[in-house]
Structure formats: C-alpha cells, structure tokens
Length: 283
Length: 303
Image (cartoon, rainbow over all chains, first blue to last red; front, side, top):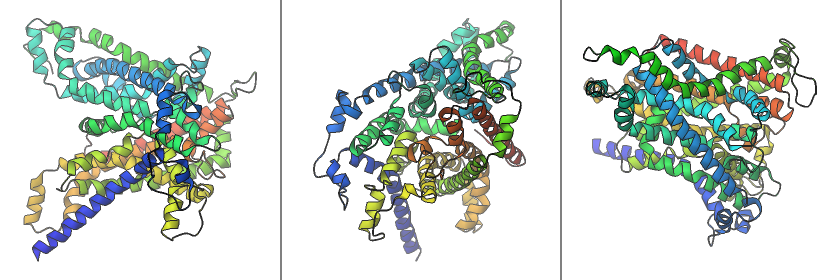
C-alpha cells in the first residue's frame, strides 16, 4: 500500500515537472522552429509544425548584414554589445567602489545615501527618461551610444551597489586588518585583497547587469531613432510593426537577440540565482 | 567594527576615503537619477509641449488636475489594476507551487532548475514578438493548434479583441516573470531546516498541514517582498504592451505606463506627461511604503 502510494506520487511528480518544462520550452521552441522554417510552411493551413528542410537564409542574411530587413540587425547587435558592455564595466567599477564604502567605512549620511540608492530601484524609468531625453537633445547626445550607456547606468548602478555590498559583507574584515598591519595602505587592501577575493561577486553582478542592459528596451526606444545607436531590441520592435512582416526573418532576429542573455543565464545559472536572490531586481 | 589592533590612522581618513570611493557612483546618481527627478517635478508644473513654441510656462497644478479629470487616466488605471492584481497573484501562486515542486528530489533536477530561468533571460522584446507571432490572426500557432484539435472552426483575431488582448498580455507577463518568483521562493525553501519537517512528521502532521504550519509562515516574508517588487514592476509594464498591442485594440490594453508614453512621446506633451509620471511615482512609493509597513509587524525580510 505504502509503496504504491509512493509510486503514484512519483508519477505525479514527474508529470508535473514535465508540464513545467514544456510550458517553458514550447513557446520559445516555436520561435526557434519558425526561424528555420520556410515561409510557405508557416502560412499553410493546416500549419506545418516541423519544416521539411532547414531554412537558414535569414541567419545568413543577418551574418552578412546585407539585405533588406535584416541589414540593420548587425549594427543593432554591435550597438547592444557596446552599450551593455561599457555600461556593465563602468557600473562594476563605480558600483563596487561605492559598495566597499557602504560596507566598510563609517561616514556621515551613509544610511541616508544608501537608502536613497535603494529607493531609486522602484522609481519608474519614465519619470527619469523625460528629462534625460530633453538634456540629451540639448547637449546633442540624442541618437548616440553614450546617451544609452548613461541611461542604462541609472538602473544598473544601484543594482551593482546592492549586490556588491552584500558580497563584501561576506568577506572577513580580519584579512584587511592583517594586510594593514603588514603595512598595506587602505587603497592597497582594496585593490590587492578585497577585489581579488570578490571576483565571484564581480562576475555575478557583471553577468546580471549585462543581461539586464542587453534586454533593456524602453530607454533605447526613446533615446535612439537612428541606426547609429539603435539597440537590437529596438530594431526587432520594428520588425513586428512593419506591414507584411516576414515571420521567418522576425523569428530569426528574435532568436539571435536572445542568444547572448540565454547562454549567459544558462552557463552562469548559479550566479544569476545568487543575484536574483540577493538583489530581487530587474531592469 | 573597529579593531583595537588597527592603528587609529587607518580609520581617521575614512570619510575622505569614502568620498573618493563614492565620487564616480554619486556623479551618476546625481546625473541620471536626482537631477532628472527634480527636473521632471519642475516640468510637471509647466505646459511644455514640444510642438508648441513659447510653451513651458508655469501653470501650477493644472496638469495634475487635468490628469485626474481625464476619463482615459482612470480607464488606464483600472486596466493597470486588473493587470497588476492578476499577474502578481498568479505569479506568486505559481512561484510557490513550482518552487515546491523543484525542491523535491527527482532525476534531472539541476537541469530543470536551470531551464526555469530561460523566460527571465529572454529580452522583453523577444518575448513580445514570440507571443504576438503565436497569436497572429492568420498564421499563429494558437489558432492552428486549436483548429487542428477541433476546438474552433475558423481562425480568430485574438489580438483584435480588447479582452482577449488583455489576457494575452497578462499571460505573456506571467510566462516571463514567474521564474523570478520561483527562484526567490526556492532559495527561501532551501533555507528552511529539515529538522522542522522531521519534528512535524513525528508529530504526525499531514502534508497540507505541514505546508500551512511550517512552510507558509516561513515563506511569508519573501512572498511579501515578491508582491511588493512585482506590483511595482506591473505598474511600470511597458515593453510587452508596446510590442504586442501598442495599447490597442480600442485602448483595450492601454495601461498607465503606456498612457504616459503616449502623452509624452507621441503627443509630445512633456509637461502633462511629467505630471502623469509623477503620479505614477507617488503611487509606486506609496504602495511600497504601505507594504513595508504591513511587513514591519511581521517577520524580518532578508534581501
């Protein structure tokens, strides 16, 4: 009796797990299948779910960056890479230094400044973007990569400070004190002891920040309307609004845009989970 | 905590050092957070409209009054509430259920835990086009599947119906955001000591009772945190609406953030848009504080 009950429970457990996996996979898998299907197959009724042969034409066009609707995607990829990369590096630098100060140093107004930085995480981006748009257009930075990097910092920096501060808290202070007794300066302890020990924390915050910056859409939509600075998300948003959209091209573009964050997330899953758990945040 | 072994000099220069370390971060915070926030507040009291030369004059609270009198404002508020309540509740419940499931021992658990993160990692825009494509009126997989299963006779224009479009946007959000809830709750579940359950098992507590007696009370802080974060996110929801429906059909999915975007960047009514954005900020901060207050009486929240 007991054994049978247990066996039934196992079946139920696996059925539930399978259901969860399928619910996650099927929509995305359909996007991937669509991206390698032929247009005829996707528009036939009844729908042909599995293509007869792979159609890699759109991926080829994206790689070549040569034709039609796919021509701009390559620029978008490059822009996104630069914007997310630079914003992440800068925020890691500025954020970890600030986090160190919040974690280790005593100074006036510390709690006020720190709480303020936390509060900014709930600020709706639209409040900030209106003045940022006006300022950027006044100083001629509209439609440029620096404008988007600066805007990204608005939500990445608080996140990095928050994550790195909790990471520094986990590093024993005695190590620094020992280094200090050995004659190491405070700056020396930061760069020779604390930062090297924090590599996992920096990696976690960096990956997390990069994914969020890569996926960011709203500020990029507002601040860039030319190919010079459009991110991949903005370019893809245009696929879906063009009349007579090419579904295969749209799906291929979507898959390409999702490759960097999805690979990073799956490879560094543990870090992401740490980040989500510690920071409880998104972009 | 200062250590006696450490020379006093080590700590004396702390505020100077703090100032140096904080400078890069504070420059950013001042430049992209504080300055815009103050400017936005100022703009909200003006009639600035980019298409109107000579606008930008101080008009006091007129924008706020106009906003609160606009039927579209309240309609978008109502839709935001429906969207917020349904997504936050569903994501939290699903989050608890899936996290409990993934906390069991089964073959391939590590793989499934990794897979769960996929929807979160997907860019919002990709998530949007994916669902738009699935619900496409002419060639969408949803219509095809329903027809092939014999559930409907003809393809339906799902995104042409305000109510159906709303359900689709809600589902797309749930698919994308549930992983965050799963991960946070799973982390909390793993921190519950096994002895608690063993003790309960000895006492003969059944699984449902165990859940409500042990698991749920211990999850309560993280659930409240989740509800706060998700409510704030729901209020800000823009990307999905922009990609899937552009607020349509017939304003059926025009929620608060999209309404602000329309007024500001489509009608170029920067003064009015700023006032709307500030109303959103006040609402966001107010709701967060309300939750925090309800939290204070309860358990401590970590993270």
